[in-house]
Each structure stands twice: as C-alpha cells, then as structure tokens.
Image (cartoon, rainbow, N blue to C red; front, side, top):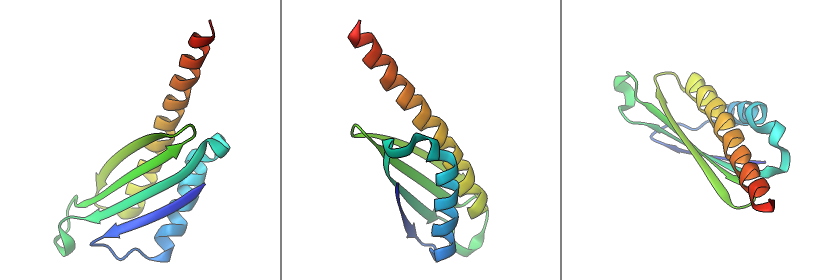
Length: 108
C-alpha cells in the first residue's frame, strides 16, 4: 500500500507521514493487496487562530479501480488522522463486502 500526504497550510513533517502510515497500516492492513494507494490531504483552515480547524480527507484506491473517500475535522491533528483512518477502514470493508455481494449475486 502506497501512502501519500499532501498538506495545505500545514507543515507536513516526516513524523506525520510515519504516523499516518502506521495508522493506515493498522486500519487497512487486513485488506492486503486490495488497497493500492491512499492519498491523505491535510488542511488547517484557520491557521494560528485555533479551534476545530484542521481537516483531513483520505482517498483509498481499491482494486478493481474503485475509490473510497472519507473526511473529518478536529482541533488535534494526530487524533484527526487516527479517527479518519479508522473510518476509512470501516468504509473500505463495507465497499469490499458490497462488491463481493454483487459478484455473488451475478453468479446466480
């Protein structure tokens, strides 16, 4: 699984990339090669003013060429990445279950 982070109005440090990779590996590791790539987009909308101003958008590209997108907002960047990664894991599982159910119905 390839992970890429794009930060907008944030200092995207290497620790954020390592933290996001660990959280995504924990949330998506069980899906193995079905998850090809995950793009993480981080944004700080208010800058130094504080508040619930950090946004995270995660896009997982799955085989066979489907995408799952989740978004979240929080004031703490690490908890935001963790929660969004967990939500992405649940959404990927739902999408793969849906795809499996549709393929089983088509075989009947």
